[in-house]
Length: 432
Image 1 (cartoon, helix red, strand yellow):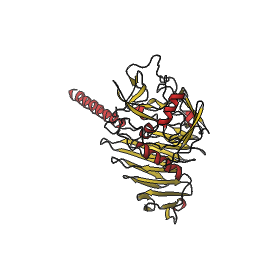
Image 2 (tube, helix red, strand yellow; image 1 turned 135 degrees about the horizontal axis):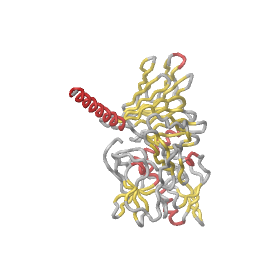
Image 3 (spheres, helix red, strand yellow; image 1 turned 90 degrees about the horizontal axis):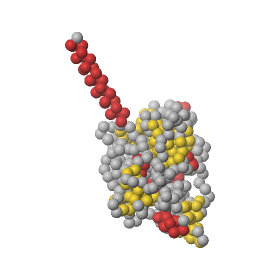
Image 4 (cartoon, one colour; image 1 turned 45 degrees about the vertical axis):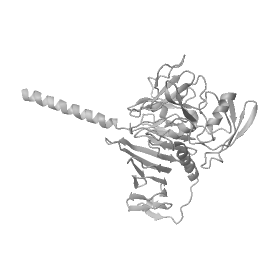
């Protein structure tokens, strides 16, 4: 009897240890960002709802499937700033988003069909495995390439560094500026293309890379995802008694960071907040929002060890402030204010920027020098913006025209890498 009792105690102890280890393993999950959305993009979060309309700043977790329709494009941003961009009629599945005990990020993505661009920065030993057709590509260093998969053929074109693709026909080297096609009907037999033809979406991919390169180059935080948007859409200031605070341009009196967004439900996580603002990723998952009299709401960088669900602030808020509360009794997406789904609409020919808009409705990189535009809005209350070209590396071509109340003005300024004179937030740690 005594031995049986000891045995039971040992078994119970072992079970507890295994459960603890399992919980620790399960905690090594990662969440990446749906960073840009154009047209119709849909997401399946394994919530039981199937595909839902997607919008920028939705978290992407392991098991997520993302698809674009005929007019849809999307970008997914990983923690170090690496990006995956998908063109119309494309489906991708995030089969693995894991973090090892050593802090290495392991990602596995399957291109089910369609066409995608990968700009992998290869930082900190992180690994990406991309599967397409019957092929498999493992990345442990920087790479930039285009990949496509359909019922008849598959194709990969390298823009940076050599790639080695593994498939049923063995290893295939894809040299820089070369394209290899695979015959799906012939066991993925590879053929080196004579010419590496340009794709209609190559320019979109290049513009996106130029945007991230320009606006994230002064980033001093341990994370890259979202840093370029912070530098484009706002700036840092040293506020007495509060330290370094980041604030979006066009914030205005009465604005608070939780006015516009949506609650989106994820299995194992519950409801997470997705901000409607194009810069709305890092400030909602790290650090804290705080309200400083005479300055307004600002974000305090930090807290890099803890990924938060979206609604968090410290100190006393402004009078009458009520933070949004996560819904109960449903798992459907619930919009707050102007919501997040509105950002999937086609860009308007022109728009009016007002105090309190905080960048909502402004496509990233579409207007140069938002700092100057912010000053004009503060003086006049609103500015009417004419149609602007997409972001370009030259940024001289990114001049924008705007008309303020009572007069019209034109502006041709270089896009800056951030707000001059502002301090940059810092910290240390990697991983969730």
